[in-house]
Length: 335
Ligand SMILES: Cc1cc2nc3c(=O)[nH]c(=O)nc-3n(C[C@H](O)[C@H](O)[C@H](O)COP(=O)(O)O)c2cc1C
Image (cartoon, rainbow, N blue to C red):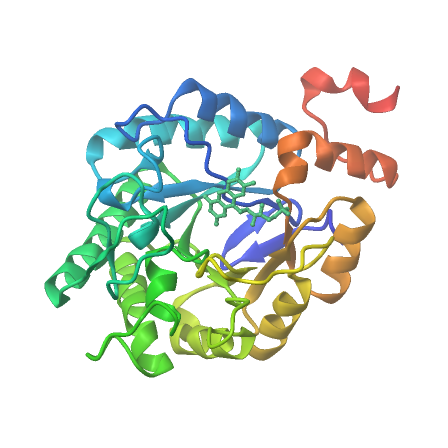
């Protein structure tokens, strides 16, 4: 199953292995792609990954996690992203971009924004509560970023609504204490994300999915049932979901073990019927196959792909599956 084709929306992938977004903090303050990104991502494409989601890419300079994040807030950044897309395609993978705003977890500004003026921890600045016009501005920035993603030639967009960054801060009752139509009920807390989806859809007609923190792993926070509600509100406007977790509050309690977020992926898949990407410490071929057979449609493999860019090719070889290798490496396929 792992090496069978699958579609997210109308995007066909050669296998079900997804490299999830993983920040490299390797730009130079301008947000542009550097040589590190080119070799890092192309190596994973050559290694056989079906879909590469590039790291959280900021729609606004003040929405960066660090000053060295990638950015897509201005047209100057398109050229490097296009080069990256072309190299990954040449390597044989499809490529999506993760559009992000760090909200109160930005360390690129002294004045971060958030739904409510609550700081993440002592080590972070206290954010300013966003006005309604600032909300509209950020929605427009996601929409413009989608236009630039189209120009760079990406195959998919993943909205970063997980890990306690801006969108997740709106979704979680622990970080959203607003009393207007963007706070309170789950419908209200989803309004910002919903407007972002609509804004992106104005400029983007290819597959679109959302990365969620299914659970906040904290008392009083969202759990997987709340996340199902969020996804139901988005409905057919999105093509899939990438199920992650946590990152919203410092006091979270997560037990980490191989496959630790798969149960949430399974619940979401069964209750929404969205194409579902699941994972969490997937570190063996057997576990990846197990996940695909029973929990999700695709698996994300993060740190294992940092350790070993050729992991997909090696898995197939060990399982006796005859994959097409890059012709340059064919002599290494047998012995
Ligand atoms: C270096 C590093 C950077 C990360 N950056 C991001 C990111 O930009 N966006 C995101 O959604 N998750 C990010 N994550 C989380 C990963 O996408 C993934 O969910 C996490 O590592 C768990 O999967 P794994 O156990 O297979 O590594 C990052 C993880 C690592 C290790």
